[in-house]
Image 1 (cartoon, rainbow, N blue to C red):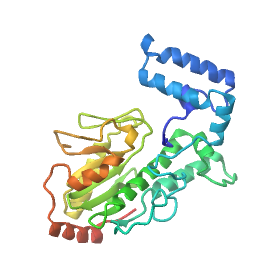
Image 2: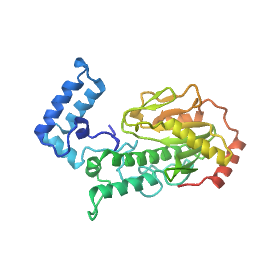
Image 3: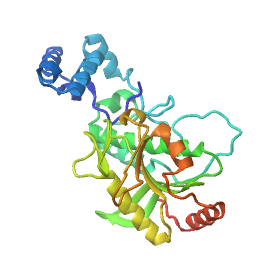
Image 4: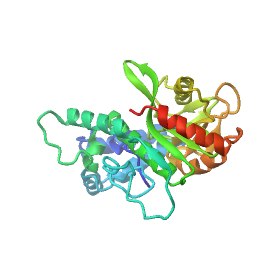
Length: 316
């Protein structure tokens, strides 16, 4: 099963350092089994995570293989290395040749996140230490989770851009779009602005390394930072950008890895965020083709919007 760089490592699940002895590892596993077992009032989901962590590093042989990085995978929907997308067009893997004309794509998806990941990784390793490969799976899984999260975010953006690119010439995607607002002195961005036959969408690509769900009008999940409301944040960013351009977004969409959402898509039903959606990556094409229930744009309107956006949008 593909694994997100943002997901907890087996060591983090078991609550021990990567350099812990085999005895310390075994004691932590047994203690957590007792604490999380459903028959004793524990959390069933946590119990499963503990078991899976042990299955990956529970013997010296398994642990050595994991520490070498041989068991690591990316969260991309196609086989790829962590470095895929670090250069070039932003696609997460080599894509087969196709006669279909791809969507127009502008900007560098995941570029800022890659830069942040590399800067933090070099700082964590230490000045003067040469990194042969900052995307080496063994190195990535040893890094702190906050550093791995930047890589997961970059891969998420690259993957969404590739998915939209496959939708064909009727779609246009702009990546890392500046909204005109600043947060703590840093220019705010929307990961993707997508224009297609069903309308104009503000899209965020996320991977918090844990399952998420829609609760009332926003997302909740263990990996989402405390106090952060993804849909509300996206709404504010889209309103700022929309006002500056004189356009209105058809919908707001947060895209997450397929395994992190129980349903294909969940839509906010009422309130100011009504119509906003969280979707699995696999469900994104259908949502962008069919829309979120709002009236579809006319072909003439789409052409007019594309021209205006191409002239006005500023990319980070």
